[in-house]
Picture (cartoon, rainbow, N blue to C red):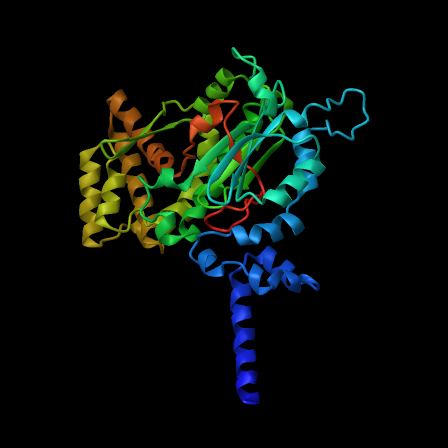
Length: 403
């Protein structure tokens, strides 16, 4: 009997180790702290099987909101110096209470127009209600809880950060390896370069300074522009900025529709300076864009000269390598250099100005089609659009939306 009890105890310890390994790292650290044993009572055990399957993580929320969520930081950020405790004469103590929060509660219960007088009240609500998701809305002209008292358009959004949403799903039309099939190792370079392009343009073209990017918790990134000038933009001004970045216009006849011109707009040229080296070093090899006949035919569809396309198809299908290709170990990069060399040679031979412009543009079109940020511009256009809060936990992945 003693031996059986000992074996049972060892098995229990192994199971406990396995369960802890399924938790997000931050929660694992907290769960192993002294005094955390009360949280692991049988009646309160997390539904770990559901978590491992990417499902419900609601049982972990009490621990997360109680010990890890940065309540004070969130309050200070969203108050912008107007904290209830602020003593400076220009502090607007109604500012934070006019901010909308939306809670998604366990069971997909969607509760909009939540508002809180102070950071302490927000913290108390999060700990008590443990929302599976938090969305942040605009600052209204009145407390959103009292909106029913205002009719005929009197209740309206007056301030909101300028936001951008980039989702990996919007890249699926041009990629060989999607996020669902192959994970972030092949796809993250596209998010990393999107951050660089957007950050540089927002700073250099629009003069914004207070910008931060947040992992969405599942498939992409969110951008928050927090300058006062950005927060008071009208819907029309937000739409104009969103359209400024909207070079990619979807797919038509198997090719990306792109708003590119010759000569290039200065912002396009700056974006290209960021995109080209990352396209060459990361996107080409990780996505294997010139590895197979199917994938290289998609790329060659952007080349406006059939003679070049046919020559490259024949060479790549036969496995022959030009002198340029012999120097490069990765076949995708080698074939890209081969394509660029053939296009440059044809540009030098072509006398038709229109065809020359098309040839000059085709290399840029390929880079922008595969690597330029694909924004969900509808998210950026309206003041009253909700966006997932930083530091909330994605309910399906259990991942924290970290900056």
